[in-house]
Each structure stands twice: as structure tokens, then as C-alpha cells.
Image (cartoon, rainbow, N blue to C red; front, side, top):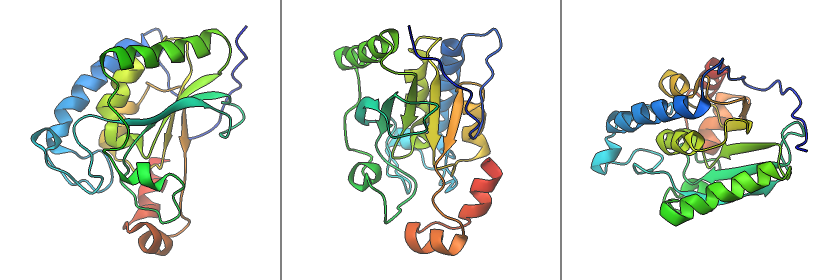
Length: 215
């Protein structure tokens, strides 16, 4: 029997009603792919055309790469054990980042395609069905910069598997609209308590107002 998932009062809770999460995620992924032509997913709002090879502050391309996919127990107790899928690349440059090499390098890891993608989905499915995990978490780096790829992955997951979005909350209304209703729980990984620290340590402006607005 799978362990029960306790209610988590974090950043937000998705509400799918009677719809299919997979279908909703697939629809949102298609919209997200078009938005890659003028990217405004993170608060940098750089507007680059990632499909044409342009790169913004995150240096991410059109397809998300995964540098880690494994069972973890170090997050919120209501969610763990969790199958964590980590996308490489991030829109922040926090000097204290404990996964800095992968988090700052959007080319780290690999793109799960074909057999590799099926193997990943099989691992996730086995972990869930056997009761080895209580949820699946999508994180980074920062997954917001890879919305289309993340939503495509969610679209292929079993509808009954609780899915968590772990973010630095440095997104925009554009990215939030794509994510709304898809995830069971959101975890906001806040980095700074004031703009001066954010500017000095992560080289980003207006951090607090952005994050507070997204909460």
C-alpha cells in the first residue's frame, strides 16, 4: 500500500476538478513551446527567441536537460520520500548554491528522449506503485526556465501520482498561468530576506517584490 500524503500548506495547491492532469499538462506544454519564441517565464523577462538559438541570463536552450532523477528524503516531511527530477540551468546565480555546477550550466545532464525517456518514466512508475515514494518533485536548478519540457514530463505521469513544483519563486504571471492547476503542491525555496543581499549575492534586482508577488 502506498504511504498516505498529508496535506501540505506550502505555496499553493492545484485543483484539477474532474479533468485529467495529463491532458491539461499536454495543452499547457504546447502553449509553452510557442512562448519560447519570446521568453518571459522568469522575472528577467529577457524576451529572447530560444527556438532561434538566442540565450538569456539563464543560458537555457529550447529543450530542458535533466542532471538528476532519483529518490530523495531531504525535503519537506509531508512529501518524502520523493522522486526528484532536477532540470539543469537557473535564472539566479546564488554564490551559496550547493548544485552550482549543474544549476548554472543549462547544458548539464541529458535530454531524456526515446528509450531514455521511457526508462525514466518506468523508474518513476515502479517507485510509485511499490510505495517507495509519496510524490514526484520537479526542481532544478530552476524548472521555471524549462516549462515546456517539465509540462511534457508531467503529461506522461500517472494521474494519481502527487506532483510537486519546487521553485525559487522568481517567475512571472506568464509562467504562473501555465503552471496553475497542474501541480498538487508548490514549494517556494526562498533565498533572501532583502533586496540588497539578493543583488550582492545573486546579482538580481527587485527580488523581494517579485517573490512576494508570486506567493
